[in-house]
Length: 407
Image: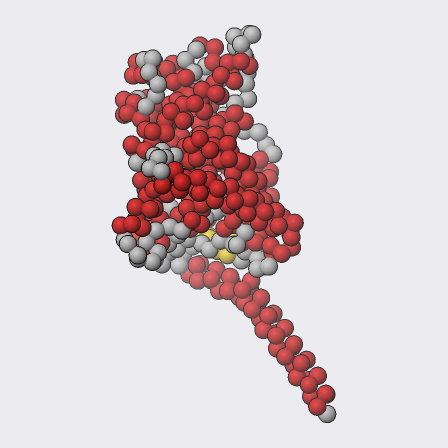
């Protein structure tokens, strides 16, 4: 009798667990999204109806693949090719609309007053949570909130001051000079030629970030970049893990490789940080980003005495350096490439830029102060100072007629 009752109890518990799990699953992936959709429509927002599990995700992938398979002309309107799904949604539902990443609803907001309200209420409108796999690649200041964000921002800020950037320009100059010398060698015999500059620009920005972040240890920095590039590709492939719980466990090999990359990157970073600590103990000055960041962190800790959490941990410092790679490399290389494309399309502006650089700099190497006097070049590089410096260095070095940017 006791055995029968035990069996019944175990079966009952199993049934309850199964029903609970099924209810939670349906609630997370159907009832909650549909309820949220109804609410958003009542607020005046429009968008596609929610589709179980996938939302708009499959359509996003399909449209992106189709757009990337078609060539575009340089004078084409590029938005439909770069963000085809979002472009279609705005055209169909207006600038304020919603769409679905899996079961999670995202809003597209363009109204200035609404954006202002969102920015002012950062305690309510917080950054979306990342999956554990995504955090291996994307971490640091970009995902911090509130007091943590303030602390990280305060300690990181000195690394991007004008005086610190001035000291990094010679390192950038070396990287740019190496690329231009390579291009000169490729066209040396004919005096002109066609070069695919994209791979070299991509390597250039990685090299510049490595030099400015790690100084004399930039070779180790380049290894970190190679690892992070692979990590980014794998993280992008695991995008579903952000939206479907347990999805990451369906790709154990990929997850294992992501963790291996993270461990190797952290090991290299720790060695670099130990080296910097020894140099700091010997009163040696470190002008690279890692040294500046560690020095700023130490000053903050000393300033606040024994206050717990006044500075960044070693793990935090590593995450910020890795974030600098992740956020800076591709954005910078894309901007430099686009600048060169525009100069190739508008040869008159290319010549005006050359004349301005020659007039302002003469035979001198580029420096940060020159940016204030380079009005035409500043129009090209916009507000992104890091890419601006690198573009300036390239434009300054490339002064021979046969190495011009041609349409």
